[in-house]
Image 1 (spheres, rainbow, N blue to C red):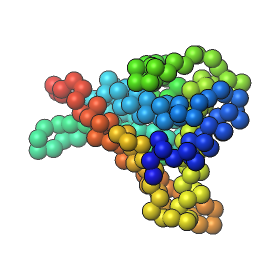
Image 2: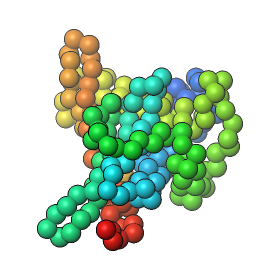
Image 3: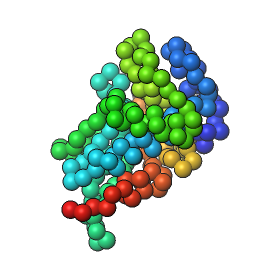
Image 4: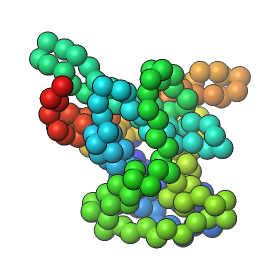
Length: 202
């Protein structure tokens, strides 16, 4: 199921964001999501190295989404892998973790929104004293999780994708609670961002 044409989930995202007192357009959700994914990849490309690097999005100190960039050795020379995840994934012990609220990362996300979609975000804070882009991202991730909670019990083959950015699949981990486990596969376009940045000289 393509996110950009699925007005059901996009409508739910829009209503939820509006309910939080944030003025929003239905199409902005996909624009912010693809800019978020691209922005993470671009940020990780600038900090990648021998030490694993991760970006996390938190809700009340709990990680709900993130990305990890690791250096890998292979027959064709060293390279980097990029993966995204839902929930509090166990990361390598020496991983450097950056919160999405980090000013540098947030600046890259905003710049990507402007460059890709001419979408400009002000720095206004919400009542919860969070940058409202951060708060909207939390809402979007939770809406995706709710989509799978509602649809996986009816169709275990439920898939959600955003063309050129990601494909999400899931399983019902605990039928008694409705808890789901989601896996996300980034597009080659996103993976290439960390692969093609500065060549490894070490």
